[in-house]
Length: 318
Image (cartoon, rainbow, N blue to C red):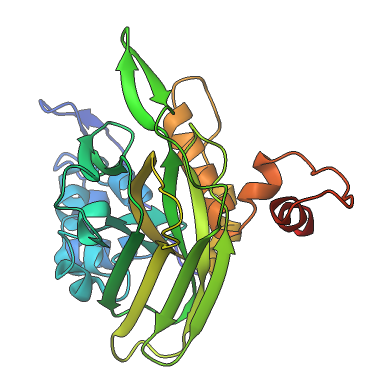
């Protein structure tokens, strides 16, 4: 950091609170407790939040200095004031020190969500919001999302966390009921993304792999200036009314800065047998934003023949 400080202490007394008083009055020389709290707070601004919490245990002076408002405000992401206006519809996750947004199913506009013959909200521990939207059966499937937010400058990726199959508990174990999964292999789902400055993205994808949560990549957008809010609109649609669709779970929409994804790989915790849920979620987020989900989840398709269908050709071209 270019500077350092040291203190020579002749006596280390253990006080009644169990902490070492490095600035004891029995010593005629200055100690750590004699450093002004404002100086300590300014020094702590150069450390990560985890290190600040550790240094707060040095003594009372460090503990009080670590509580300074200006210290923690410097650790907040850009646009955090705008985020407070969306706290009910989104969450912030620490992803390599950058800001990521999660929008719950209830913050999305889902066609027919008020009719329990088609859609239901299901409580589950598998979602960070503790609930998901579940489609039983419907002809017209359309989900719209809209967000206006002051994004920091950078490139962002938008994904949906989806699953085919209803999560249930059987004999105390989590299982998937795929009896109602149908209609997703006939026509692809269309993903659309647009921004207030004229950016557009359009892609189509078949929903595969029933029984597993997956991140489906919508597209990317670029924020050139952080002076004002950026408005984005996105949609998921399968509106071919020649057949019904069912068995779809919607957890959330997810926006992550692409510039932080490579660093996010280094932030994935080591699998130790007790953190599988957190470990898997972080891996799926990174792979989903990098659009590598299908490359890892599906086997290589068979070679095309004269009898191959359109579905076979699309799968082979991927």
